[in-house]
Amino acid sequence: MQSDVTVTQAEELVSAIENAGRGYSINLVRLVDGVATYELKYRGEITEHESHEAACEALDELARREKIAAATAFLARHRREAFEAVRAAVAACRSKP
Image 1 (cartoon, rainbow, N blue to C red):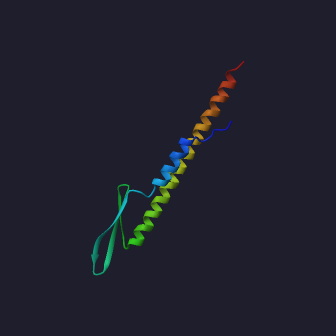
Image 2: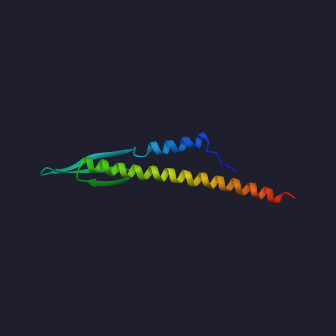
């Protein structure tokens, strides 16, 4: 038995992946003797970085992890739904005389 991904499920996955990396801010918080410190705020977490580039790299990594988590959760949910459909079909077959 095959469980197909619905359009709605696919749209949920695409939305989760597209939204990864959104909702952040990078601000220069200190500049002392030419040494800059940037603060990255993302999903309630705050980290400090020695350059804007380093903050952007950290954001990219956080977004990558979030995309992986969204895809993994989607696959786990889809597999669970497929498993439940197979289990129901097997139970229905067993209940027939």
